[in-house]
Structure formats: C-alpha cells, structure tokens
Image 1: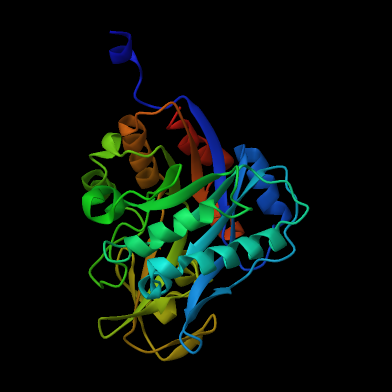
Image 2: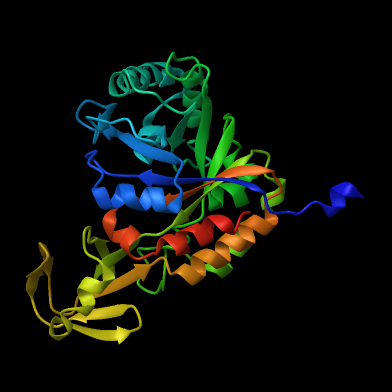
Length: 329
C-alpha cells in the first residue's frame, strides 16, 4: 500500500548543462547563468572520435584544451561517430579504448572530476556489437576505473530496445530532443515535438537502466534548396531571419523563402532557397519534461540542458530554466 502511494516523479534532482564547444572559454554571462539556475554538473564535450578514410582508423577531432576547474562538477563526454562504429570490429575495440583513455588523462591531468564519464553514440542494431564491446573495454582503462560509466540513449533506442540492445553501462542519459527528421522539408520542428515524445517514451518505466534526462534549449536554422536539405546554418538564430524581412519572405510560421541571391552571415543563399527556423519553445519542453517525470519511476536523477551557449541561455530566464528542473521534483 505504501509503494502504491509513492509519487511517480523523482524527488532528488541535480541540475546540469552540456558545454558543447571546440574551445573552452565560458563567458562571464554563461557562468552567471549557471549559478542563477543552480547548475551543479557540467557535461564537458572533450572530443569526437571520427573515422579517417585515408588512414582507415579512428582519430580524435575537435579536442578541447585548456580546461579549467569550475565550481560545478565536471563530467567528461566523448562523442563517437556512426562511421567509426560501422568500421570497427569487436576484436579491434581494445586499441581505441586505450587511445581514448590516454587522451582523457592528458586533458584532465591535475583536475578534480565527478565520478562519471559519459559516452555519446547513436548506435544501431547493426553497430551495437562493436559499440558495446568498446564500452566493455573502456571499463578496463585507468581513467574509467572507479567511475560511473554512462551512455546517451536516444528515443528510438529506448522504444526499440529489443533491436538496439541495452548498453553495458551503469546508467543512461535519455536525450529528449531531435525527435523528427530534420532533413525532411515537410517537418515542422525536428528538435522537440511532445506528441512524438509520448509515442516513443510510453514504455519508459520498464527501461532497465537508471536514466538521467537531457532537455533542449537550443535553436537553429536549416537550409533547403529545391526540396533538398543543405545543412544547419551554424551561428544563425531564428531572430536573425526576422531582422532582415526584405531579404526573406515568410511562407509559414517557421518557414522563409530567400528573395534573392546573397551572402548572409557568411552563408551562400540563393533565390528560392527555403530556411526553416526551429526552436525549443518553453511550453513544448515543459510538456515533455512533465510527461517524462510522470513516467520515470526512480528516486533521483540529473536533468541536463543542451546546451550552454550565450545565445541559447539568453532565450530563457533563470526562473524558466529552474521551472524545467522543478518539473521533476
């Protein structure tokens, strides 16, 4: 009877944020926002592991240097590309694990860290054997010893767990964003869509790993030409499109047509190109957070915002961000 009366939402929440940049230079504004939101954990993107076609081997790229000690606990995060996992064989993961370990020890020499390391990879049914082998090999490395090993979990990996498998880690971090096909010109918002989230996460309670939760606070602009996806216009925000109305013609709420050939914010735009703006609207993020909190049957978790850049943080008040954390309390 007591168990039945227990609230479904966890009561102990540790606020966190991702720092996903290639240079470690937090601004004064970012640090102030961390403090005002009560951020306790800093998930620091250390480097990517990418596939070098010339050398036919995995190599680190975008290595983060000059990391400083912060008041927040630091959790190193390593991103593994799909191409690496597709080309790796389970028998060859030991060497990659050794190289990852060596680089992490160099990056964090003399620094105090949280007792957790996180691996980020969008593995599939076909690549899971190699990725899971790598995770097991990492557990044997000195940097990972006596630390919690966590892995990001995408929503399709949770929904289709029988095909995707359960990674051999201590806990997962569920990424509650990137819910739609951003390359599809008919998609409205690929970042976050509450009805889609509910379909994918309806069996959340039965997932066999303890989970932390990541929520989006970012936005972006996507470029299409003749219905084909060209890319994400990095550094361009939806409000940048709004400020130069003569150059763009609004067709729908978040869809704009380029009126003439031009170079805008360093990007080559042609007449007729379509620009789709996507944002993490607070109402949508709150709806997803409340649904997850209601269906997550555990006592504690970290709730992590993606990501820490001044542009994203400036779109939300400290009160609004605290409200997202409070959704789980």
